[in-house]
Amino acid sequence: MGEIRVRRMRPGDVAAAAGINRAITRRRASARWTAMVRMLIQHGPGECLVAEEGGRVVGYILGEMKEFAFGAERSGWIEVLGVHPRHMGRGVGKLLGQRLLSTFRRKGATRVFTAVGWDSGDLLAFFRSVGFDRSAFIILENGSA
Image (cartoon, rainbow, N blue to C red; front, side, top):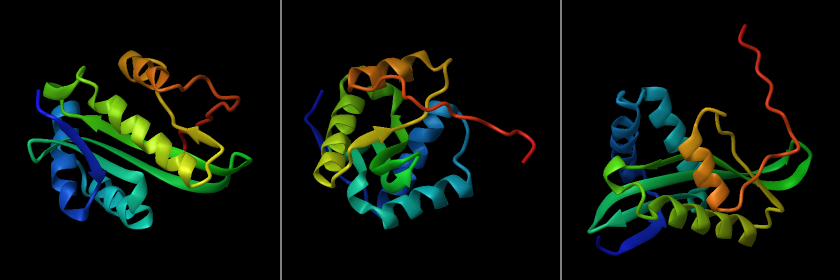
């Protein structure tokens, strides 16, 4: 394993992130997904990071700062995380998560949130490893929209 370097995500990294997403989900990233990634990069470039090894993007994490979401005055939100399957289990996600949490703290976030499906055991374990626990909030869904 080479050295992992974390840096801000650039618009030119969207294709690499889409490739990682495809390797994870086995589905091509939709135009809406790539538009969302571009919007997050534009809106908060310091909150969107990639991990590189040998000059290749091997993981990404996309977040954003929000004001007054769920009553938290200034909070960070982790929206999307992906590590190429060949690089999972090597600390790439943890490095990205820790770096983004540090960025959120530096920008004044008092809390950081994300949402994970209860059946996503690996993802739940990952978020617990970087200090997440259950929130006081319950995510509600209306499937009729």
